[in-house]
Image (cartoon, rainbow, N blue to C red):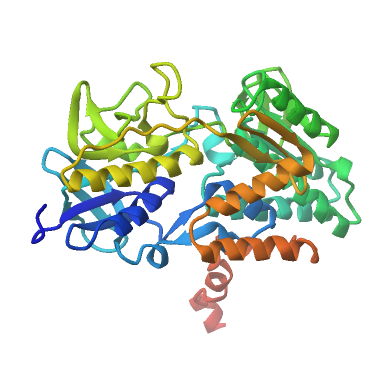
Length: 448
């Protein structure tokens, strides 16, 4: 170990893997052993399991994100995006949020840019689709849904009202189910302030290409989820694909078509395209190939100094038959980050890394306020107990005591105060009103 020149550990991305790994590394290694540099264009880590609750107004959006500079005080934070990694030279090219690009040399790199929405070339999706992976998208969806209620209440045109009150969600995984259930719960709650509208005026549509929802749990739990959504008069379309949404007209593979002002795409994720600008080995799904130790591997050769985990990494699942990989879940990401940080510390100190092995504990999902579904270590729960477990688990997993307290306070206040259902659509274009007011007066007008 070289005490004069500490190793530089570059962490690319500050999501679940990046933040937890950097935090653990900064605690495991002294400043004489290593310098931890974290690069991310956002100044915070988004705790994605809380996006549905943030969108629905159950918690403040600010409380679902963790400020990097507050949490990673022993790390160096670079606000920018890694545009290229040349591991043969152990150098990363970074584009800061302002200014020219710069090169950052490193001894070890943690490749954790995460994932992006996996879209398909569906006509109209680019123009009309809304994603659900960032806090910005969650806030936008909330404001958009509430805005559509205002439009429906104000218009005398039945076609405009019908389109405004038709909400389409594509994808029946956890993100899609939770987003659909929480947003419907919020909109139904908001209707008490809209005497012009009835709950039956709304149409909530779920489009899923397979024959089941929530593939992470057993079929009976998925069937229970569908039954609960049907009881809330939702339109569930299984074994159905979105074929087009040009001009907001949704066309499905079952032959149905209808106009919808809201089209939310939650049909899976894919590794960040940033990985295309690296020299790391990838599998057929474009994930970085890894050993169980979280070291990057090229065939039978370990890529020294390169580590990866989370959504963008193909990590063998040692609890299953050979050929299986860990699922892209927050549960694995957090645990992989801890194991990876420990392994990097071991290698820096001249010791051998240890394999990551974790049997998936199960899954929990919220279906709206006081409603949920859970399957944990083979134990199945429904309704209020599952909802309570969902909240308890995620409250325990979000980083920092500060955020845990704020989330609990939000939930506690919700027992006594009504949910906030005001749309703040001006947030998305705050300069529009000022720009209009500050337009130069035409010369002809001044002359007149």
